[in-house]
Image: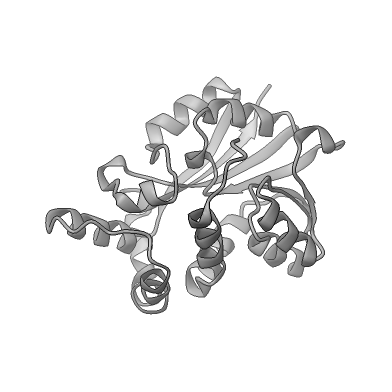
Length: 228
């Protein structure tokens, strides 16, 4: 993972922490897949998801290399690491929300996370999907890629994971990005617009995921188990 950060990285983390409807929905989907109580959130940002799990009685630690974000996380009472070699235990579950797309060598990072899992431990990933809706917004927040099911299946299988579940999330978000593409609108990362989307569009239309979770969505939720 790179140690280079800019103002947009911090703005993205701040914005994510304010997307209440989106967070409540996605955090619920992710936490349903956790087995046991022992969790490491890899790329934990300001500790928003860690705080959610902590309130639901999980034993949670964070891993975050952004010093500003790490400090925010620690202020919430979350044990937060910034170096792999600082971690002297293995976890039943590792969650990682919107992290791998920021890393050029994502396969190496998958291996790092696997090394911190117990035998048959779970890796739960939440990632942007569909390269078709790549936009200026992706470039603004330093994405290297958006994922496909095939790409994730290949990379996780190569690292000796068995995929338990893979589903799409946020169909309405994907639909809006497609409309922008058709109209040749180039969306940029805008905190106010994203908060408006969260409070109006996502709140009203998140139910569409019931019908489209196996077809398409703005994100992919992947659950994989160590199998070696």
